[in-house]
Length: 237
Image 1 (cartoon, rainbow, N blue to C red):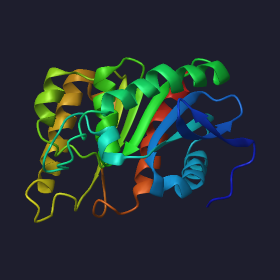
Image 2 (image 1 turned 120 degrees about the horizontal axis):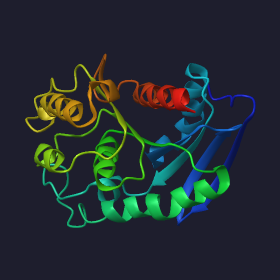
Image 3 (image 1 turned 90 degrees about the vertical axis):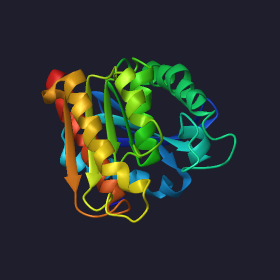
């Protein structure tokens, strides 16, 4: 699974102070950005391989490492998530790093391409938030996003996404937990999907249900979201 497909180049670069792993096919038609935690670094080659195996649309993937998962990705404070005072103050800086540094560098190297931000869990929530804060993103793949965070739905109603298309997914057991906060995730994701249908039209968003809890097949779930976006942008290329 970790064998890199032929005609795919691999390199590691520091961009804007952030460690980025770049996997690029020839003549890419889409840029995939994946914000990943340090424990996911070893999954990047497998992710690129899965996407290439499922879709014939060539892509370049920038897997950007997040050092502090909570503080760098959480757009506002929520005691249910963390009581650390800095959590909720750095997400905008993370987004600016993507829009003002990473994207211009990718454009310089690969040209102007449709941009898909794809992430899992808390980072999946960050991806949806980012798509409401900037018009630099064309697509979103939010796999098992942590939409149980306080005030998410009121934020989403007041801040429509600016992306053209959004993929959502959730495990069918994620809401079946005794934790009263986490158990809200199913209803929150359903409500987000209903809102996206109003904002983007039903043809431009999808909610896919996977088997299992939050930690089951995370890489495969995210790969499916990237592939859904790639296929749609590939038709436009």
